[in-house]
Image (tube, rainbow, N blue to C red; front, side, top):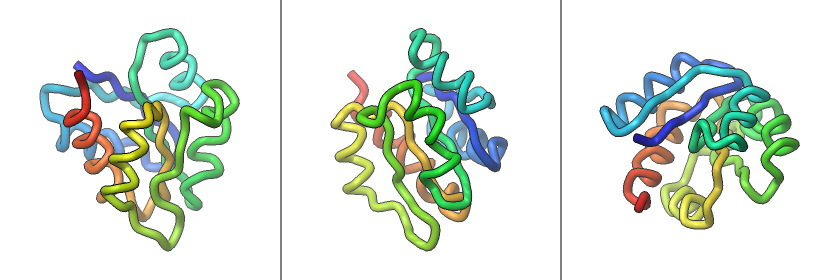
Length: 121
């Protein structure tokens, strides 16, 4: 079971996308960015996904402060679209937290979840 914590804007939409993409292989918990990052650091969750209007600011700023910049990445900025090859690279690098613009939740979140499931082991 891969455990996701969710923060930022449109948390329920993110949760629905995680559950749709991961089915019974995932658990998704709506949280705050602060509490979610603390859960990852404590080993109580595996990944964080957050959204904001820009994709990088409020989606990840607190999480970066707790988990470190090298563990976090924006996958889709406002006006942009996520790229499968970029998400694949970030997951393989071991990133733990992903931020996206609200407008890209429906495409970015399934890509992230599917890539994590593909690479777990």
